[in-house]
Each structure stands twice: as C-alpha cells, then as structure tokens.
Image 1: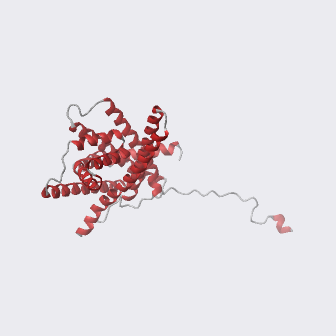
Image 2: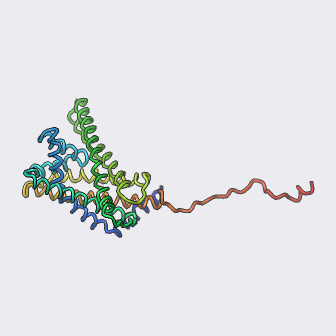
Amino acid sequence: MNRKDIAQLFGTSLRDWQEDSIPLRAAALTFFIILPLPSLLLIVVSIFSLFYGQAQAFQLLIQQISAFAGPAIAELFRVLLASASSPFTSLWTSVTVGAFSVGGAVGAFAVLRDTMDTIWEYKPLRSRRLAGKIRRWIGPFVLVSSLGLIVVASTQIATFMFDAIRLLSVNIVLTHISLMAAQVIVSFALSTLLFAIVYKMIPEAKVRWKDVTLAALVAGGAFTVTNYIIGTYLATFTVTTIVGAAGSLFIILLWIYILNQIALFGAELSKVYATDFGSRSKKPVIIQIMPLEKPISPTLKDLET
C-alpha cells in the first residue's frame, strides 16, 4: 500500500466509525463492563487466594493488570479493590454476586459481538431455540475469558524479564529506562495479540488473520500510548485525594471507554482493509497483453517461397 491507500483506508474507517454510531456503542459496552467488573475482580482474588493466600493473590492480580495496562492503571485498580469488601460473606451473597457478575459479563460480550456483526454488516440467523441463543451469548464470554491464560503466561514472562534486567543492570538510571522500555514492549505485544484474537474470533462473519493484522497493530499501539498518557496524567494529578476510591473508579471508567473506542475503531479498520485490500477485495485484475515480436499470420514473401 502507498500513502494514498493508507489515507483512504483510515478515512473510510473513520467514516464507517461515525455511521455505525461507535461512540454510543462504546458507551453501552462500557456500562455493561463496569457494572460487574469490581465483583469479578474480587471473585478472581478469592479464587487465587485458595492457592496463594490473600495477600499474594491480590498482588498477582495487580501484576496481571500491570502487564496489560501499565503500572498506572494497575495502581487505580489496587486503590479500588483495597476499599472493597469480599463478596463471600454468606452463601446467599456469594450466589447473588456470582450470578450478577457472570450475567453482566455475558451481557457485555453479547453487546461486543452484536457490535462486531454490525461493523462487518453480518446478519446472523435468528435461532428460535433457546440453546442456540444461549450459545450465541455465552460463546464470546467463554472465548475472551480463556484469553486470561495468555495474560497469566505473559505476566510470568514479563516478571522474569524484569527480574533479569534488575539483576544484570549496574546503573540505576539505565535500569529504570530498561524497565520502562520492557513494560512498553510487553504491553504493546500483549494488547496487539489480544486485539488480533478478538477481531478474528468474536465476529460471526468469516474473518482471516491477514485481515486483522494491521488493525491489531494499530489498536495495540494506540492502546499502549493511551495507557502511558493516562499514566503521565496520574503522576501529575492525584485523583484519589478528594473523593477517594471514587476518583479511581472514574478514571477506570474513562479508561475502559477509551479502550472500547480504540478496539471498535480497529474492528472498523480490519473490515475496511478486508474489503479493499484483503480477503474480500473485489478490485478487478488488470491483465497486460504483451505485443508479439513476430506476427503469426504469414506474409506475402513467405507465401511466394
């Protein structure tokens, strides 16, 4: 692709982004995510505490968030969860909170799949059977939840990398710069991989890996840059001084909304790329016919001989 193709690609994606009302869909998706999010995180901490203990489980969760979103966002989650209480105070509370959290998460992923289908202009077949509807709702939830294994594995690799940098470095300034660079690389690589999987697997339309590669790189880069812009803001202004944990919740809400905007714009980009340059491209193939060096028909001189 040349510069004109790239400009056309992003311009068309931005126009489709506006026509599909992506800001409103991102807001709805943010609402469905933020409602069950604190309860889901507390459930994850409670499950991890069965194997590692309460303090280590809490630290492990913060490490997972830090590897994906950066240390500034992880600190916001730490402040938010530190002021929350365990949902497992009684059997009735545990069942209620668990059902509410899982139901909210399934609803969020159902909205995500519906938005992806709208972007790809795919009209799914409406199943009259309850089992078919449940499968369509739960499928994205199970898929994205399984991506947590990738986050856990990458966190262990990142922790090993950071420990190696601290061990091998002899200069404090060099160590700090190396750790910041390693965090940026890990966050970019992990977010790009997760975006690519979501763009490939969530839509019900048939999507190829080559259609989502560029979009995942763009979304991963934008996501990483956004995280560190927010981190710089948080390092300059303290959001928890006046309103306590509510300040952390507000910044997390804003962060999730921006993340949804980036993710859905990447989905628009992958669809436009697939239509114009990828697997769905219908550009005509121009066949150039080369002139023959010698004419096929016999000349008058050839007939005389």
